[in-house]
Length: 157
Image (tube, rainbow, N blue to C red; front, side):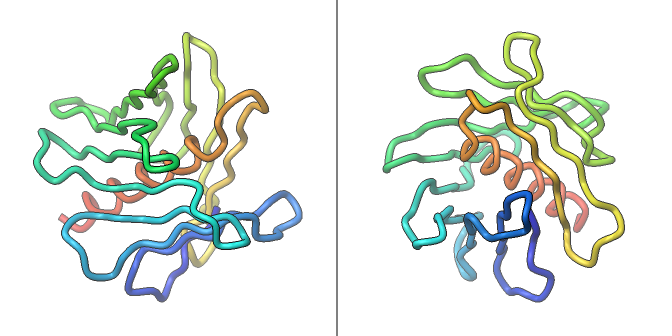
């Protein structure tokens, strides 16, 4: 997953192992809070990400087919960045690892189901994301984007 460097809005390109584009995430330029559309290569929306503005701590909702699929929330008052992902209709996910170094895992019921690792020597923010086949790849990728957005917002302040 790679973020475009020179863009007024948040824009990510998701590629496969062969560096071929398989999906895109585009943010709206002028909106209150973050609003991003996750599309496949044909332009079909597969998820929508929206920041919840009136919340205690950074909170984002991820929608699939217009229905709330998950809530990504950063815990406040923690010595290390901590996120939870409340997944509708499934067991929730926790994030473990070193979020400051962008090396972390998505964990469900004590088992790592996805791994995220940031490439340090690239011009744009580039992440390697490995997801178990049985997991919802779109939900994991959308949550990774949310964590990146929160980190970027906090770095500006």
